[in-house]
Length: 105
Image 1: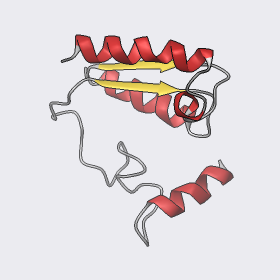
Image 2 (image 1 turned 90 degrees about the vertical axis):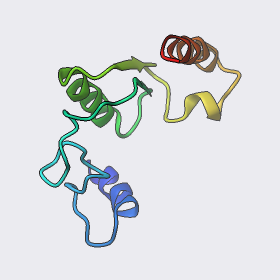
Image 3 (image 1 turned 180 degrees about the vertical axis):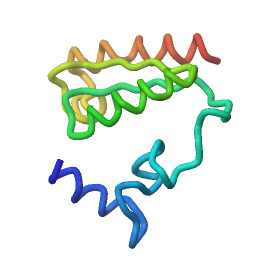
Image 4 (image 1 turned 135 degrees about the vertical axis):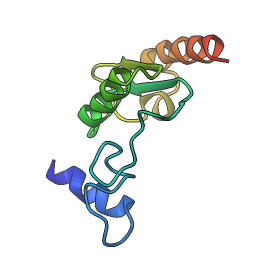
């Protein structure tokens, strides 16, 4: 978690904490997402630094009844489908994205 703390410091406004809404959408400083009507969300992860947070994000939204799909590509790094666009994993993610867009458009 220490390594991810360094990344968060680069992402949040000066003086912000780990409870800033940009970092923690379910934190004490964040407005409730429950009453919001959200468009369907696709969360695609590999084996990356913030995988646990992405998984928790998807789980919490699903518990609120939001339309969310969580897809994990085990063993793949962050941005795997753009970093190696001709890999087997990148080829496998494209139909997932296409199906999600088609079903939710």
